Length: 434
Image (cartoon, rainbow, N blue to C red; front, side, top):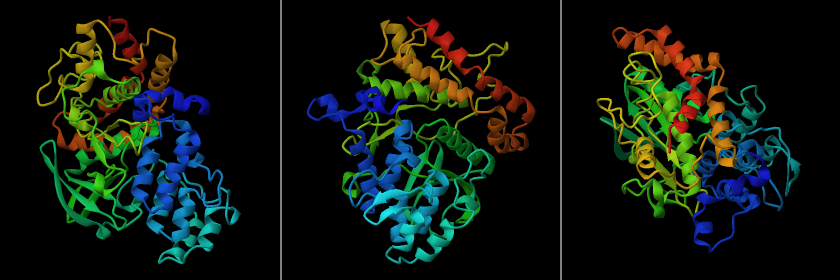
């Protein structure tokens, strides 16, 4: 997406603009908001913005510039100045921050290493400088990184229980905080199931969808195995500017009330969830950051634990070998939210009302919404087959040992073939709609 039309394309997501009482935020204003979070020590909020805006090219971390003003440092430069080693590692490894990239600031034309040398001599300053000068200071490739305890920028022993527990489906999950106050969700589960959380996070981030960083915990958190993921935001306004709330406020889902930008988001999440066979896209699994903090009101889709669960149980093909239509509302698999998912409900509404939600991308057309969705689905298909297989192999290995009759080879071949048919499946679906 071109820089100049990025905000225009997603204007439907802006609450203030919708009300007509605020101008559309400029590219500079949005970038400064992210930079100011790091400057003011609101690191979790800063990471939330980097994640929430990742789908728009101009907001990818490596392009965040210092811009104008004596105090304009990139997030990495801010963290280097204060000597926050764990967070420096996180930005370099998982947000593509470049320690050698120079920016004009009050100290001159500097890079992050030079800013660390000029810093406030925090507890970790020397370690920050040593890390930035080491061969480790390069982005981790999601396709090849194990994303386990060894990939975390801190030790699991540094996490503290927040005294909060959550149910994720039928599983109890636990909230921990790190030394910067950021929340992490630990889901105790068998490793082969935890591999799904890691794989779906990798895939979402690879195709430009907001997703929490997720790590495999083999046996390091209170002696239990499972997955650990950074949580979006905080839970109440008084706890921070980046508080999260239900996307649909717990109300019945009415596609007729969607803003164009929200429809665009849901269609992207729709395609991704059909790629991975996630039948759990109910209202509670969609959240957003407060609109005053994130004017794009990015839809964040969480909890992909059911991904691939219905392989050869009605997804992605029927018993006769034909491919099932995406999010078929007439299909009622046992033990899942489907067809009471947002996606199936949207299709049911379209067929009943004979019209589309505002901003609907119709793949029968050749216009901007359709081209954006078409390009996103092509991005799914463009994941190299060998990379897709590599990411899913740990899960397939676990299934082969845990599920009677499961064929690893058949699974990896079948889901890869399914990936490569996504645009065809969605084009066929749209041709059948009113």
